[in-house]
Image (tube, rainbow, N blue to C red; front, side):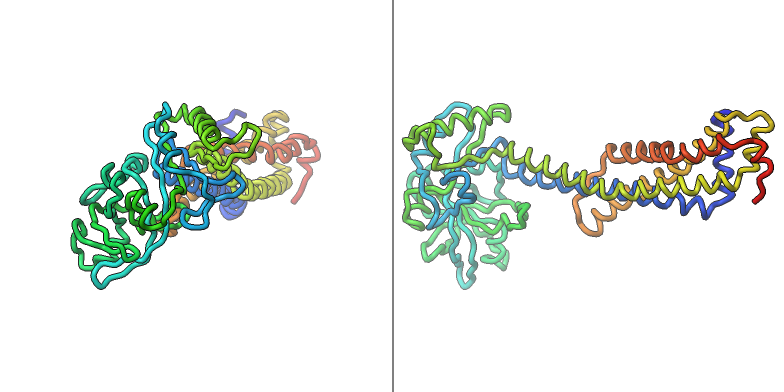
Length: 406
C-alpha cells in the first residue's frame, strides 16, 4: 500500500471519529501554540530591550567613577569623585573617537511664572546631542560658547514643557528658574518616551556642564563621560586605550584596582540577548511539555485503534498486506494527526501572539524559526509516538487477528 492510499485511510479514520481525533490533537495544538507564543514573547522582549539600548546612542562607552563592584554611581553630591573635565578632554583627544561628552546631574525645583515642577537637570556639552542622536522641536541645543562661558541657558524635555507651560506657550526665549537661578530656554527636545526601566526620558533639563558644576553643584568632578567610537569594530580596542590613559592620569599601577569603570554598550547588548535567549528557551521548554503530553495521548489513542481494528488488520494481512504495509499505515495515521494538530497550533500561536501585542500591549516578534521548529517537532512526535502502536499492529498474528471479536 503506497503513501497516498495510507493517507486516504488515515483521513477517513479521522473523519469517522471526529470528536476523538479532535481531543487527541488537542495536546499537540496547545503545545505548538504555546511554544510559538512563548518564543515570540521572549524574542519580542529581547528586541525591545536591544532597541532601547541602541536608541540611547550607537557605539557608546560609558566611563564612570569608582571601581566596578561599587555599582551605579550617583551624579550629585555623595558620589565617588575620581573623574574630571581634564580626563574628558584627554579622552576626546584619543584616536578612534567620534565624540566624548562629560555629564553631571542633580534634581531641582523648576519654576516659570506661577507654575513649578520638580525634575532632573543634566549638565553636559553639545557633543551629547550627536552621541544620543537627539533632535529639537524648536530652538537648538547647547553650544560650545555656552560651555566655555558657563552661561545660564537650558534645553527642556517635553514633560517639563507640558508642566511649566500648560497653556501651550512657546518656551523659546522665556525665563525659568532652576533652584532660584534664572535660565533662558534655548531649545525643546523631541519626545523620547520612557526608558526600559520605566523612567520618563522627557522629564529632564539640559544645561552646560560648566554651569552645573560651578553654579549648581559647586564641584569640580563629573559623574560620567559618554564616549562614542567611530565604528563598532574598534570599541574593545578603544576601551583598552581609555583604561590605559586614565590609569596613567590617575597614577594607578597595572596591578592596582582602577578608580573608574567602563561600560561597553556592545557587551551590554550581548548580555541582554544571551539572557533573553536562555529565558526564551526556558519558556519554550515549559510550553513544550504539553507537546510531550500530546504525543503520549496520540500513542494511547493509536494503541486503542489497533485493538479496535484488529480484525481489519487480519483481513488486510490475509489478502497480502505485509508487516511493512500495516506499520506504515498506522505511522501515517499518527503523523497526520500530529501534523493537523501542529498546523492548527501554528495558526492559533501566530494569532495569539498578535492578540497579545494588540490587547495587552506586549512586544512580540513572530519569526519563521519557532514555526519551523513547531512543525518539525510535531512530525517528530507523530513518528516517535506512532511507531510503537504501528509496530504492535504489524506484529499481530493474521489468524489470531481474524478470530478477534470486539
